[in-house]
Length: 77
View 1 (cartoon, one colour):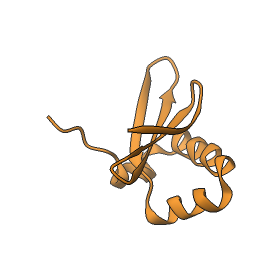
View 2 (cartoon, rainbow, N blue to C red):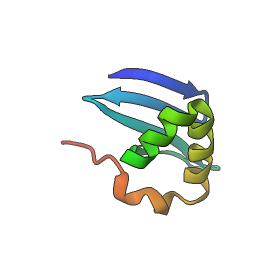
View 3 (cartoon, rainbow, N blue to C red):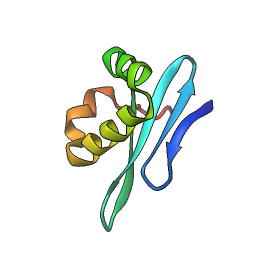
View 4 (spheres, rainbow, N blue to C red):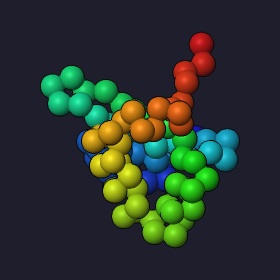
């Protein structure tokens, strides 16, 4: 695992086995992380627009996390 970029108390982008994983801090009083792998189109947008794309994407996740459920990272037990 390699940390690629991060914004304290907001999000962190990690590269793991070739995938880009975004962990976004969500919630208010009850905080939780919403973790998902970037889709091909999200990855292309990140590569084209850089950090500013991640800031916008993280904001979208905090507003509507259910839009990203299909891409969530499932923990392995």
